[in-house]
Image (cartoon, rainbow, N blue to C red; front, side, top):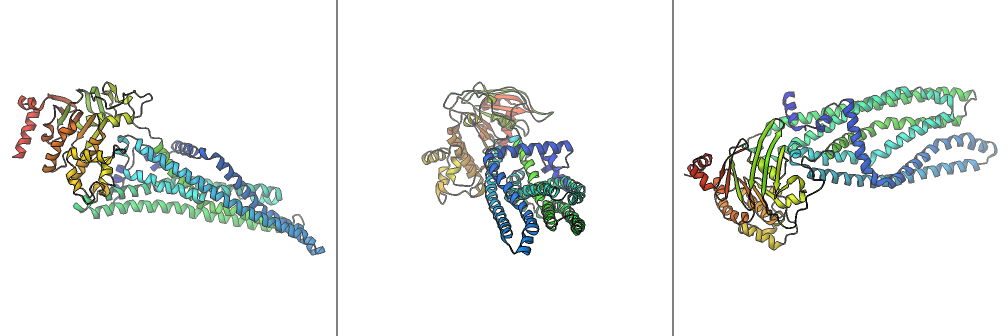
Length: 616
């Protein structure tokens, strides 16, 4: 796979918003925004657990104090406990100091165990809340977001990114925080124990600070690239398997393997780069630590020889130095988890900051109970999917309540766009779409979805039983209501012949059903929901001739006493309409009953004649 091919595919896969900014090397200002966004998210997630966090912090401080007591007690044992025992044979002080050392060790164990249990509880609660927020956000965001944000990236947010954060909570936080506490505590104790020795130790600090600062910046960029590489792997993997039939049909496997190999290699190189940084940082810390210990041991030994420092002080000093450099050395491993989790948190925060392009109204219109009449009004509606590319220029349409209107025209004429605006998957760029005189933007999602239902060419069939899929829009529907809906649209016969009838598992995406059967289930689902406005967007195009005839008979029952917009290239479906709108470039060029338009000799008449000729 060439670099150009890889970049071309990456360009199609990467989002057009903050996700892309996070994938590239961000400038300083962008990095600050990303960090602030992720900090706000983490603060919000931790806020409900303030009391438990306070207890966890107290346990961590107690654990650190118990750990710091060990070398100090060793110093006392050497300088205060052993001399009396050697001179007088009195082991009282030695035993007392040994008991204190044991008590400190037990305290350190108990507090560490308590902190791990408590942090696990907090961590899992935070992850549950975060997963729920991300899932709720993905469901709430508008269709426009989902059309540019691939399903593979959604899966990556809920899997690999969550795993990175879980890894930090599972074992990284206590090590990171304790390492920081140890470094600060040891620095203070060293200054208190022996100022000259501490000043010698401080000579290593500039090197440590410069090295750590370099590692923090370089690893942050590396792990952002790593998260993006993993996301691309998941995206392409999901995309390939989602279209596996097309892959097999067109013998696409070799080319897919080539592309996947390139993306996989990107991931390998990103991961290796992160490990190269660790390979520099960790040994360098160890080298600085060993050099410092050698200098302190030499200088401290000389001080002991001349009676300027006690032997116990030197021993404690060396033990504290070990507690100082060991966390610094291991910090690279902990920082690995921290940077990975930080990069993941930034991406999740970017998703959670997304705003729906069709937001809920601040003050919803109080719709009366029951099914509304269903009168539709489009006034001066203009719409563009992208700036400067107008699809509907100043469209005016009135649909009487209970009327069935067919939208006809060439591909790209604006038929499906009108359907999406009526279903409020998008809002018009200008103008208004009204239901019974109420702007759709003044209705809540619950009000709108209860009043308007769309049936498309590829309605999704979910895993579960046939009955579950029919009652998808009305979970409280009884078995009798489900059967009645299926019988009305003519689906009861084929459902009854299935192995378990209405309890038959349809398998993934309805794979157990034919295309026509899946569409009949979708019709039954829409009929059971009983909307005021029903939109049929190419809803019969996937049906064979016998199934289409069956649905044609049922459509008259389904559409009775309800407003309907019917989009179809098969004019057999259009013939049941009360009215036909012929569209061209987003404008209505013909409007009238089907029979009148056929006799008028206009565009619809020509389309009708072409359709009749195709049947011969």
